[in-house]
Length: 87
Length: 233
Image (tube, rainbow over the protein chains, first blue to last red):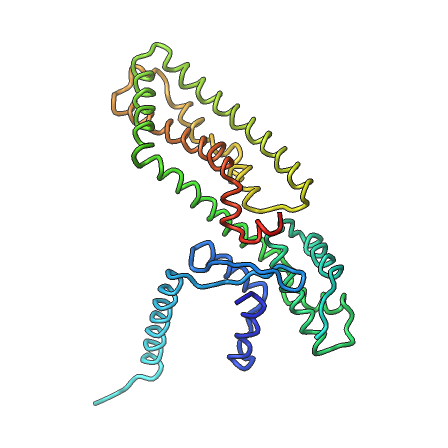
């Protein structure tokens, strides 16, 4: 996917409730690329050059582990705010 | 769906340059993003002019415009460059290069420990390396200037490679500090002479890698880092 496509996809998948700002998207993409979590491919599209980002193997591993960490965090938060009280 | 003309794309490149994005690698990405946004706007509001649609897109980057993107890109590229240097250093820690490196450390130790000119050798080494370093920076800068003038494209990694990671004179500060503290090397304990020889050799190795080895392979690294490099140069 390319940068603009990512912003549109996120908007579409979240029905517009989550919008990635351009000023935030590219720094994240470049950081992930520098860390080796993404690779880049280019293509000449309509007289301009388009950069496509692709997740690498280590990027996929990182995604899984970050998602697991997020789920754990959500569970902890849920326990904090909705404790199951028993007597 | 309306599409941008070649002139409009060219004017977007100019627009990014006017907003302090000098590097072609970043310009191409921002131009494509803006172009997509403008086309989408024309789809929704066909009466908008090119300039109006462009300014609307630019506003989405926030009050600092492209600055945040540029700064983060520089940080990422510096990390990339650091990794490149580390890769070269690691080569000298493996056979066969480590043999030569160890021999140079041994030779430095012998000179520092036994030669009557140890102090002069140490001082002379620092000044020679400093001079070489400055000369290489001046020469490389001229090369960059000429290349930028010839093809009109600036690449962030190339600038980093030819200016030795923007380290400048900072590179030699630790050696100068060491120089101020070190006197009568012949009379020092063995362990300190060994440590000193090791530190000096590591510094000069780093200098050699940054000033000669990496710039020599610049084209190869640029092609690896920028897939667009080969199709635009």
